[in-house]
Image (cartoon, rainbow, N blue to C red):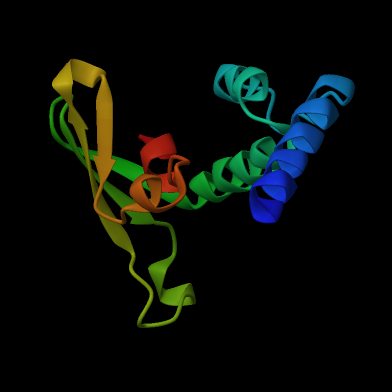
Amino acid sequence: MRLLFDREANENYEERRTKIMLPAMRLNTPLEFHASKIYTVAMFEKFGEILYEAGQYRVEEVEKGSKYYVHRYDPEKHDKWCRVMYIVEVLAAGEEIACECGGFEHTGLLCCHSIKV
């Protein structure tokens, strides 16, 4: 019961904080504006970091409207073990997006590769 109470208290704190504070917009894009209306302040800050990271990638369309390769700019500047290309697929006529990194399935936030697409 104590764990549930603590978790609920943290969620209530975040919701109150979101109502009081206006989120800081970094890029002033429609996507960022929409996210500011949906996410709490803490989640919006994480979304902003992911949105910023998306600038490190370029998109190559493989199949029109359904399959994309997302490449990292300057791959030689990164460690050899670091992946430099991801495959992102748009499913269900644009209603769903899937990246092979599995970021959304793991965190519940879109990954930078999906955002870039």
